[in-house]
Length: 475
View 1 (cartoon, rainbow, N blue to C red):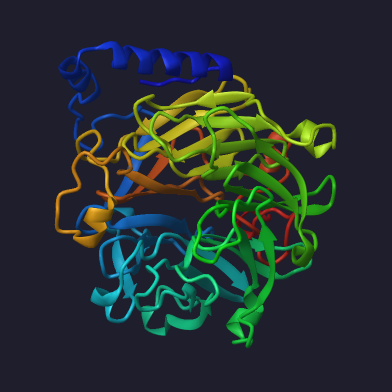
View 2 (cartoon, rainbow, N blue to C red):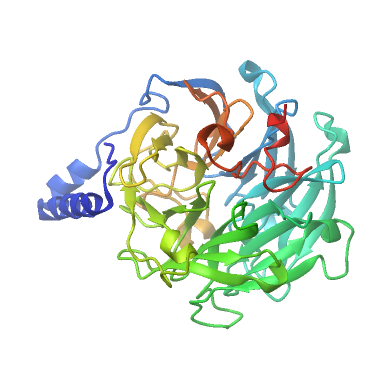
């Protein structure tokens, strides 16, 4: 069931669907909401072409996915979550028909570690070398609970014998590690790492050049506080940010950080990351008490957002009045989209006018937001292979991963998504079924300039910096 609709209509339709389900007798409601799902790949649109599928072992192990933007480096990186060993896999897509894991890394003494493990990884380049930074999140009181991220030099790929760890970024004042990270080529030339944890109501900012050089301070250059923090307690997650996304505003000539967390979503001027300034926010929105997913359109006008509870759609907000200083905060969405009202979208990548979504049980979903008030689905491919509401990650299950995580909600399936701008390759990491790679008909690559937009996305030009097209697209 696809629900592309205007914001008001989306809310009305959602309320009606929930009311209908609640009005049914318990048995009838369970039957309606627990319809059997076909196997992975049986539900798809004809414009999505599968080019590779790599199962990665037991269910509920695959986390985020990263893709090298250089077509001459056809490598995908998949983080490993929940089950030991925490780490990541590097997958070669050089020959999609023979795609497979070419190298794996895991934390030492994996059986002694507890927690989410390795949730998200990011690639960056500096001084002619390519690095991969992997976030880690280990429970307080367990080994390495102060390790937020580990940086690896992966320049040598496909030669895996030269891949090596070059730095560990520790945050002893915020035990529990980093849940989400984002790397950004700042307009001043520095490669920056923005990180969120579970113990502090702020984001941490690191200079990766200094971190790699083993600076005593590990490259920490600043913190960005959540304006709606509820507590400064070291042991409290109140006020913590979740996802982060950074991009350059060529019109205003300033760097921006978009942060999701307690209270909603926030836009900061990070032209001087040591002294970030709040520009505007999205707060007081019905149905949102805590932001989760956040990404901006290339011009920074629209914010594509998600929350982390069942039945919640992706909401699109027009930031224009806030960016112009005409409104202190934005409280009404401009549009909304959902693949299936019963489920939940997770990660999103914006390549205007398309948004590529890792939508848990609904797999890869692609919608068009050329009219942000009326987004509509253009393609999908169901990667998840399991029953509705199999879920994951209860406290009981984390303590004993051998138990079956039944009836724990809709957090299972497509977790991460990434797009290679040079040729339009799409990769999806599914928590249960592993890595998938696709092409979408009519989408042979992306450049903002082809759409009258700045070349701003997660794919960055690490050589020339913000405002320049990614290196792979430079003639």
